[in-house]
Length: 255
Image 1: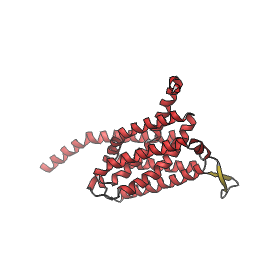
Image 2: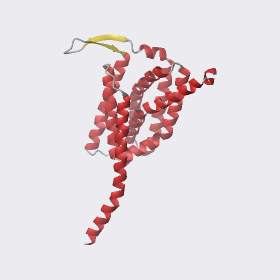
Image 3: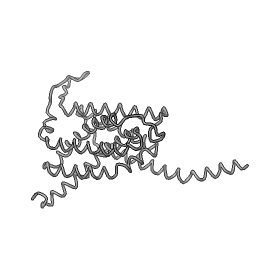
C-alpha cells in the first residue's frame, strides 16, 4: 500500500477514474435505452445488474491484463480487396468489429422502432422484452466496452491495483447517476434519438478501429455533448413558448 503514499499515484488514479467515467457514458446510454423495454418495476434492477456486470468484466479483464495486451498481436492476415495492402487481424480487432456491428444493428433497430411509432414499455406499461433477453444484450456490449476501456487504461497507468480502484470508483459514480441519466433520456424523445445517434457513431468508430483506422474519441464525445447542449437549449425554449401558444389557442376557442 506504499504506492498510495506517492502523489503521482493519486494523480494517475484521478485521471484514470475520470477517463473511465467518460468512456462509460456510452455504456450508460446503451443500458438506459435497452432497459426501457422492461416493465417499469424491473428497469432499476436491469440498470443495476447491467452496470454491476460491467464492473465484474472490467475487474476480470484487469486480472488477466497480460493476456489482454497480447490480444493486440496478429492472429492472421487478410488481403484487402482493391488494394495491395495486407491487414493483420487480432483478437482485439475481431471483438471490436463484432461489437461495432452489434451496436449498429441495435441502434438502427431502435431508431426504426421509434420512427414507426412502436410503443415502449415505459410509456404503455407493456413489456416488449424479458429481463433475461435484455441482460444478454447488456452482457454482449459490456464485454466490448470493457475490453476497449481496459486497453485505454493500460495506456495511462501501468499498475493493476490503481486500475482496479479507478474502475470500481467510476462504476460507483455511474451507478449513482444511471437512474437520472436513464430518466432524462427516456423522458425526452429527441434526446433519446440523439443518444441512439451517438451509439451509431460509437458503432462506426469500433468497426473503423477494427480495421486500424483510429478515430479520436474526443471528436465523437464533443459532437455528442454539443448536440445535447443545443437540444437542452431547444427544450428550454419550447418550455417558455408553449404557454404562449396555449393562451392563444384558448383565445381562439373563446372567439
